[in-house]
Image (cartoon, rainbow, N blue to C red):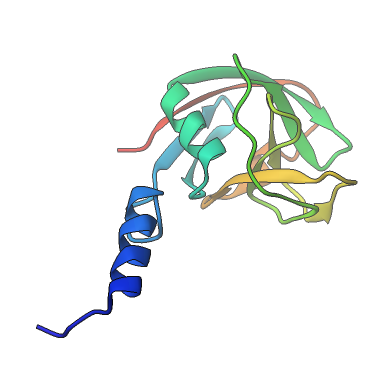
Length: 139
């Protein structure tokens, strides 16, 4: 067996304890009357907290013809933010507003927390009006 230096062992241990990339990521299913998609959650504390809330039913509104937005039952913890997003990004605007982006774009500061990426066809959300979604762990 190859010898691993103490600092490297500590880094690996910390990555595992903090949910590093060595751990499997959660997959979720988002269902609605318009269709179903799956998503892979990002490896951060906000996405982990979202996973712990499942299953959820969320009423979502269309916003700016680029996204569906809805309120979570409680706030998620803070995590790093970014301003750019792509179609299929599952994000968090404030601490309790979840967003499904169906177009590419960017948001003003302070940006969004990336919760995950939808694997399926997000064009199912590209229509005006409200939609109720259910979110649960994918099997």
